[in-house]
Amino acid sequence: MKKNISSNILKGKKLLNNPLLNKGTAFSETERMTLNLQGLLPPRIETLEEQEKRAYKQFKSYKNQLQQNIFLSDLYNTNQILFYKLLETHIKEILPIAYTPTVGEAVQKYSDEFRRPKGIYISYQDKDHLETILDNYADNEMEIIVATDGEGVLGIGDQGVGSIEIPVAKLMLYSLFAGIDPAKTLPIVLDVGTNNNDLLKDPMYIGWQHKRISSTQYEEFIAHFVKSVKKKFPKIFLHWEDFGRDNAAYNLAKYRDQICSFNDDIQGTAVVTLAAILAALKATKQDLQNQRIVVFGAGTAGTGIANQIKSAMQRNGLSEQDAVKNFWLIDRTGLLTKKSEEITESQKPYVKSTDDILQWELQSLDEINLFDVIKNVKPTILIGCSTKKGAFTKEIIQEMAKNAANPIIFSLSNPTEKCEAIPEDIIDWTKGKAIIATGSPFPPVKYNGNEIIISQCNNALSFPGIGLGVVAAQAKKLTDDMLWEATKILMHESPMLKDKQKPLLPNIENAAKIAYKIALGIASIAIKEKMSSLPDNANIKKIIDANYWHPEYKKY
Image 1: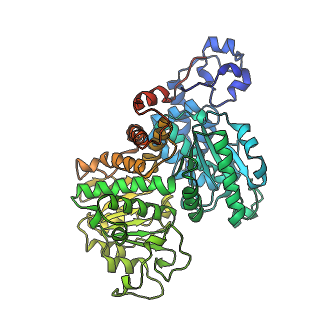
Image 2 (image 1 turned 90 degrees about the vertical axis):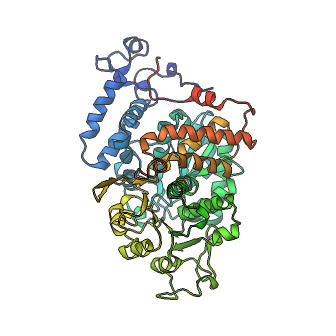
Image 3 (image 1 turned 180 degrees about the vertical axis):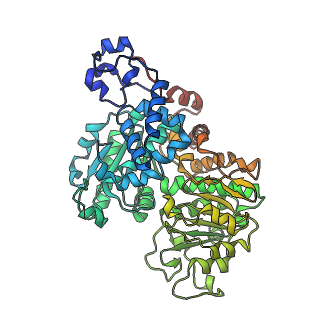
């Protein structure tokens, strides 16, 4: 059962300096007397709702988005109940500031704007003290860890120690949308150096100013980290976030059977994207196995999405060999073929042979580019995970629209300035035929007198519910069937299934309701697959409800 942190441990200034326990002006008169707070606060006693109104007014006073993000960070470090109440009340407006896309700028400016540490910083230099470091921060009741090594942050790459902002932001959403107690969450940055030359030369950089370790050193460090985490938190849900393209897939594959693991860039992105694709196909009465799919950007997210779609095709009766024939993946050097250099393990199933492209009309045999693939494949689905701004040109989009009644075009790269094409252009170039989703939030587009709402393939629609389900079921492993269950639940929440003029994915304001449904589904599959520590007749709904955290003050 959930236990509250005891306020009896802290009094006076120490209590006010604890963001998990501090209530500010909401401390009652009795609490002020018994907890040594008399004279340490203004005399007026306020409700949480009154405090939230002031906090929102303060938030709105900042016109720059980075400054708004810094204000939210300061509030998070001061009074987390108030912070979450503010987000809950103004979720649609504030989430893009606290999370993507603005968090990307906060990561880049981390050393310049540093005020107070968050979570745990595990430097390679401290590799022999991992258990001590974990003991310095956390008790044994932690439920979810989000860890990053900062090599592949959003679309901005290697950001070193500043990447701690990403685990902090992810855990905010676990609490906000899935009711995970913030006191039981732990953000971690694994500072293994950086290959970002700007950071290596920056005298203000507060991380380990050293080139990234690699190969055996890196693998041994990660192995030691996992072993230490598992020893201290045997029931933990370990969420890997923003690792580099090679290490992301490798770490997940190696450790998912050793510790309950999840990689949001690979699995969370794939769940949301596949759910959106399935909804689009269902709304337009098409079959998944008949689609021709081009993925532009064959890194962590791109291959993860392809794998999830391929798995869905296999569930619909296709063999793996037949399923991969429906995919064309394009990496930095063009279409993945047997001539491509540096093929990763994740990319290998999608590599094309010479026979596959023998009859193609090509501009050059040396590099088969996106336009070549679109012209020859005539795809029905185009997914962008490249971080190449403007890569989906008018020529490419119009070529694709020639061969599909409703081309499905997802430009998923973020932050916003990395987007392959903006929705307004895609709609214009396809004469309103395209079904669109993006990685970053975009405003509605007006076309032919209609307002088209642009769906964001936001991982916040998937990972909070997945985490809640795993925690509630005390799952030993997150399986492929659990991820498939999450995908189906999210797909059925698509507004487009009821009205083709509605958006493809639900509004982020419905994320908590969706997370709850996904959690119930994940937990039920965990019990069915014998991956849960709970008995077969466990009442998961009752367990979730009893432990669900809400941003509200407790009486001390």
